[in-house]
Image 1: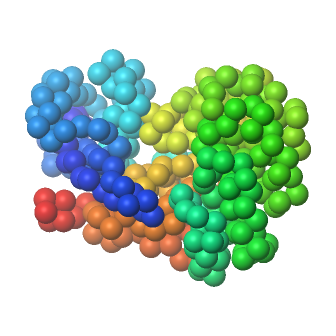
Image 2: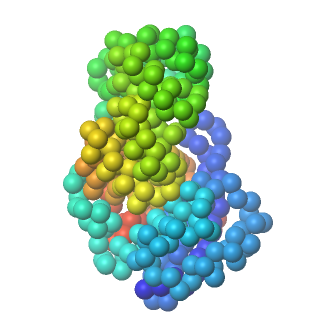
Length: 345
């Protein structure tokens, strides 16, 4: 089975809870047998440059076997991690459809029948974020992610407000979003000690993992690294310098499902916890993340997701959480069908 065509479909999707939009691009790969596979990534491409993008990729992709994943990932034209993620995702969708099996079975089995979700609260004042946290806990979410406001005092107030309204009904992760220098990060961690936070993600505004390791030695709060993890080599670097006890693996940041699985293997071998993140999705990337989380034991923590679905969900049967959990779709490939009428609209 070889690739015969590639198409790009840009969609300006609202980022849930923020009022902002992101340019999400759906990628469709097709074969001579009229089988198609879909991928999704955030790419800042303008609509008027899509024909040139297609013309640049088409002669390189056409004629390639969809099964030659590692060879495809080494192409210079796919150097950009989000594009590499979307193309690879579409190939895996094709492979599953050709085999007549859901992707999770090709990745090792349906290890988790249900994938627990960690709902990201988004930037909001403490009272508003706390009310949303309580609502999500009432809906069955087992884990919540609070996002830094950019000031230590505000962040400590935010965590205290969330904990007051949710008590112990949901775990809490705090994403510092790389806002702080060493002194402020140390103050933040000191204030969060005993506050019931499972770990602090990306506390420092640096990519220097030795600095993160230094902070870890100065606090009893667990730390996690996400922004620095752009592939398995970065995951190994986190292990070697002892920077964190958790890593967050973002599909688009690491460049796709294959790289994410390798990152998870590194974390598991080193005894680190690992969680998976794919960001807001039109349905395609979410389905891919669910298959990966369902089949990979190393992703032992909740899959991170927005607290609200994207309005422009473009799959025929949207994935709706039940009690804060989702199952990987069990159809062939990614197990979803893109609604072409909605996409064209």
